[in-house]
Image 1 (cartoon, rainbow over the protein chains, first blue to last red):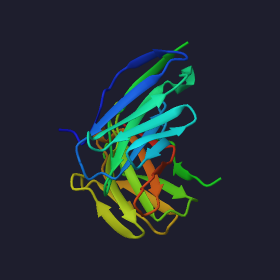
Image 2 (image 1 turned 45 degrees about the vertical axis):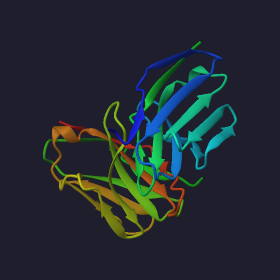
Image 3 (image 1 turned 90 degrees about the vertical axis):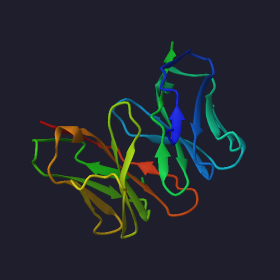
Image 4 (image 1 turned 120 degrees about the vertical axis):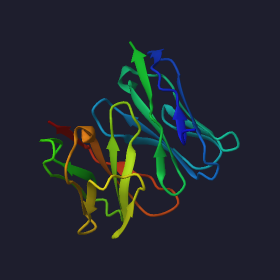
Amino acid sequence: QKEVEQNSGPLSVPEGAIASLNCTYSDRGSQSFFWYRQYSGKSPELIMSIYSNGDKEDGRFTAQLNKASQYVSLLIRDSQPSDSATYLCAVSLNDMRFGAGTRLTVKP
Amino acid sequence: DAMVIQNPRYQVTQFGKPVTLSCSQTLNHNVMYWYQQKSSQAPKLLFHYYDKDFNNEADTPDNFQSRRPNTSFCFLDIRSPGLGDAAMYLCATSTQGDYNEQFFGPGTRLTVL
């Protein structure tokens, strides 16, 4: 079982829709959870971090964490073509472990 | 602006010819990381430093070495690059603590001919 699992996609949504990205992790002791956005050929950029159960909102982004289910998600509201990228889920206990990412395409 | 800088952005080397990649940071973070990322894969941690304390991942090949001469700089040395070492190499930094937010440099794309 992979430590951090994501659906590789591609996930395609129309402009203005809500994009929902999901991630599960195997280490129940994980403490910190992150979403990174990575454009093709570029490095990962941190967009959200979440540390406790529940929702955390930042602009059009909402991160959701459920430690009991070992599940973290990212919602992108009012999706824009510029949101088209690969989104990496990362989970940290002692070291950071990344998922392989979900490729999101937002169609105009 | 505080940032993580990597040089060069693109590196072409020949099979077996040593190469050194560099990373510098102005964030004054005490933890620095080197990751290898191949196409459509997760970044893979090679090693990291807590200050000068070196931590090697168990599956990092001996072909990969690292140096951190001071807080700001960190180097990745690939002693004898093989075709399988072609990848994006990412440097990241963080403060040591519970939250471990990591900030990445722009990466170095390594091509091995």
